[in-house]
Length: 252
Image (cartoon, rainbow, N blue to C red):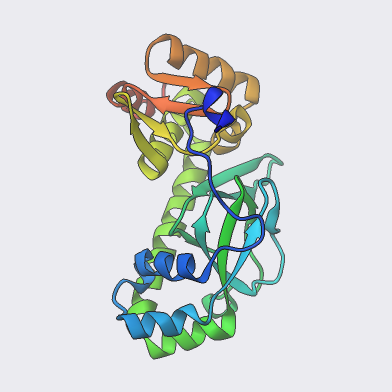
């Protein structure tokens, strides 16, 4: 019996506590944007260079300042990228799901990781070393071109998150964060968009640079006004249009 269904509408991530299978690894890489242009034999060659590792919910994958030795692909589960802000409060940059990539390498100009990564749920991650990734990029130029685009988009997204945390009202920041998560991790659910990741008020506070109490008050208001449905650790966007209007109005 799935007892999780009694308390939350979220799907339960079915992830091995130790390893994900080679078959899952190959299936996932086939769907990753970086490798979309590789044929079956090329993808099998790339697959042999990856290793997999399981992480428990809350376990750190790496800390900011650790040597940048690996590049990662999320195979299953959810992970979050956190940046330590100058004023002391961490900023939650992204919550990533299957197929998303993260990490940096010396070849990209970073000797250490600029952020901290933590498993949001039980997760299986695929890793590739700097030397092996360099081999892939040299043998398959289309992968290199795709990677430049992916890294550029991640940098743009991180800058937008930091800008959002620094400007506008907290209400507009919370609305924008909910819409972003709905776009990334949303699933249709009874006329709403259920954000398919355990989401606490602390997570939203870290995404918006706000206090947990303030976020809780705003979320209660959103729920009362029919903009969202929510419960312990989950949120569903009900009225996207009104949330978007709030997100676009920094004076609220």
